[in-house]
Length: 186
Image (cartoon, rainbow, N blue to C red; front, side, top):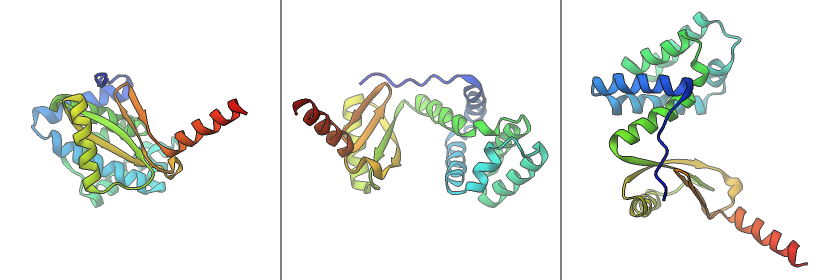
């Protein structure tokens, strides 16, 4: 497999790099990653929080107060909380999802890991996740962190993106291939 592209650029890349360097210097890389994962989970669960993060309608001070309340309730403190507050003060909170993705890429590069985006029709068991990690490690030679996304529209199978390679063994793709083959034949 091709080497994973871990370069980060743009606004999100600059913020992620600054956060990563600060976390690395203070030896809290994993704690910051865990806090960012927790914040991302909150974002994915709450339409109101997504609106707060993405909407330019909210004034900076209102957005900052609301974010502080969310962070306090979620137990996110320290560097991560301060960083998210800086994003808010600089009116860049809308880019937080890209910053989190870029931070993960920096952590993976730092630890010598590769990250694979895996799309499945339904949640995988721990046994299946471990088997997938082992299979990907045998191909890449690196430990592989998985970002698993559930998408019932693929019907079955899975889609794996690792660096510049994509392996699509979803049932949806196979059915579409059969459909196209039948159109050409008949």
